[in-house]
Length: 175
Length: 321
Image (tube, rainbow over all chains, first blue to last red):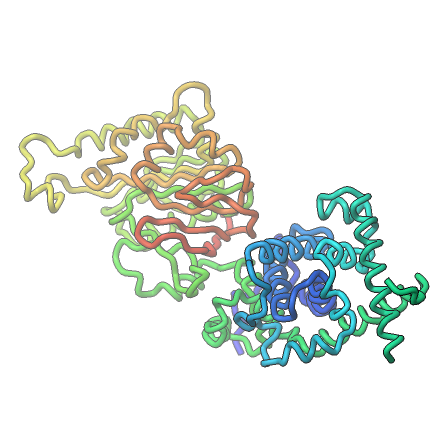
């Protein structure tokens, strides 16, 4: 096989390190999709937003210092925009993304997760706050990300926890 | 509300954490991460090109090894020439377009001038070396002459006499060269006795096309007061009549402020094609509605009136010496 000149490494190239991105992608995508689902995205939509975000991350890879924080922020904003743009709840499954290639019974899959059922009645602000908290953000950080006050973050968090606790208590009773 | 006892904070936290783990775990099994990586690293619109890419790149490796992140690293000029064998007259290959991996050309016959914006290290001088090589390859010395305006001397040796008739490395030398060039252009202007037929086939004079390649225009135009290129201004719109071609590169930083500069302004008015290489996005639109972006060296967007905007990777010729 002849050596292709295309693949000759360039000594000074700031080209993104593909291996680093690949590693980051494999490790982080499931958490990112979960993060979006906690905020109210259905599975196909969460996969689509995660994939779009990751494509952007790859394009800007050489300039991103904190990839996890970067993709969380970009993905949440993308999701917020999409939710605002959709008048009715998104229940149609859009174009399949590379991430979610096989036809899946989304509803059945989602039903297996108690927490998604528990969350489904919560206002989106409470879900957002829970999602960021789960990923280790403090109320002050969340306030900054969502552009609301820390007090609002704390009170939403409290309400969300109370609702989840009630759900949990109920589900234990009925068992 | 009934008085059912709520779980303790610890119980709730443990339950939530467990649910979250289970969700992430399940997602990891249901999502096709490898396909996702491929799509992210090879832009989705290229998926159909994967097989061709393998051939072009001559590799057997996995698809995720082939990424457009690799292509920009270096596109040696010789490789481009291989791809551009059947260029056709007057067409100068400059790089590959990202959309179809076919050579991108400058066609001085239909679009006489060219503009390049990009920051240091983005590939401006390399572009001019590629153009100079292209001129030497595509034209006989009797058909084309070159004047280089290059205060940083990054184009040394890329074109030699008899093609090279002047090398402006300072304002003074450049002013002299351009004066002479303008004098020749003046003689080539069609006089009152030129017939319509002659105008059509440009047969009232014979001689070489003149290519003025200007690197770092910001340095050239910065020299106090007079712009050494000013004498060419009136001939820019008549370039087809007089056989004049001006190729200008400029730093992207600060470019938006000087777009009304006489030379740049005229070239833009004439709808000249160009390339926007790496630069600060804050500059705003530089060619058409294209703003610069942070890009690897040699990567840019080719903007022409005929074909719109295409991402390209420029060929690379290292500086001499």
